[in-house]
Length: 182
Image 1 (cartoon, rainbow, N blue to C red):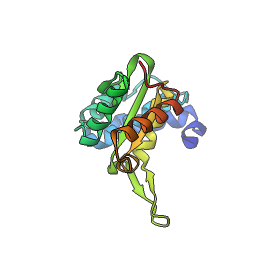
Image 2: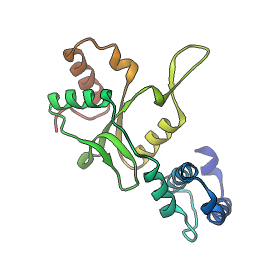
Image 3: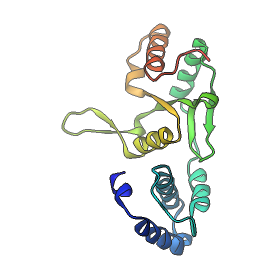
Image 4: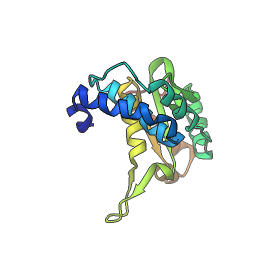
């Protein structure tokens, strides 16, 4: 983030010019990563030239490369949210192409359900830490005005009953300024 914000418009233009020249040879994953970079540049209000913007081509690659397979964990969290009366869309896709696990688009509130692939393990402490892709998605959603709450697989696995799960989600949604109603 700090590197992008300190870059001049000329530097951003140079990067985007090089991207446009070679974009046809990029793999879908690479275009997907570049789309996130372009979106971050735009949302961070970095002055960047509009000409030669690869954003639309990159967005198509990002959306294509972001096909989702909802997990049993996500379905379980969704069911408990429904018990609480927290109405939501399942796998909502934003205009920017982000797939949100459980969303209330009208209020720009969402709950992301994070399985093991969203984390790395700190080799010194053994604790799980969010990986870069998960942190970037959260940051971009917040820059787009979304309130993001996250349920981790390791927190969810510790809950023994539906009562415990309802209490956990109620507390999580309250702490993220998203009441369970609505």
